[in-house]
Length: 293
Image (cartoon, rainbow, N blue to C red):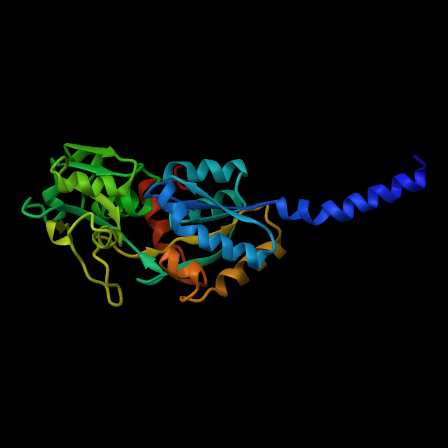
């Protein structure tokens, strides 16, 4: 084959395969999966399809259990992260990630923690938890199912790891609620909105439960125990170019509440990043990464 023909074949090959190769470079969005991988995929697939249409590249969801978020971000296996505020603080402070937006759910752009017990248990306040058997999600990794509640109790002079009969880790928040319902444990740490979701799914009835230290905050309708903190945030990891980060921000801010991507994910869209002062105080008090040194 002459040099001229070889160059012509090479150019034709690049022209034919170039766009396909570019589109095949998937954008990976790590998403916290506190209720398991299947539920995370079902909830966020429409969101991925919407982002693909806006970014001009295939966007895939990578469901992450709370305990795997930090290590996955550290490894560089994801480009963006959609997770709770402690994880957001971690990737911002340790990795230099850029926080792009805060999730705006139907309950608003903030959430909190719930300490739930079985109705009739006699456990209604923090002091009633002394000597009881409790379950949470991963210690120091789950925001609405460990960190928020532990900080709340610490402010009341209670250390779950010393003052409870036991505190154990579960794998899914739904299982924690069902364990309380079935009398297997005395109380559980879960995030706001879970009880309402499980009732809507026909798994429980909320009137079967009590909320420890139940509180009210203006404009927030979900049952909760703790103070409220910024909702999940979308962050661009350092490997993402500034142009792609800006493009992703434009995409999520362009979401409307009636779009399939929003309705399937049960959100309204996204808002500008909410300050993290409150959660940073909690992480520093509890010596949780990135403030564990």
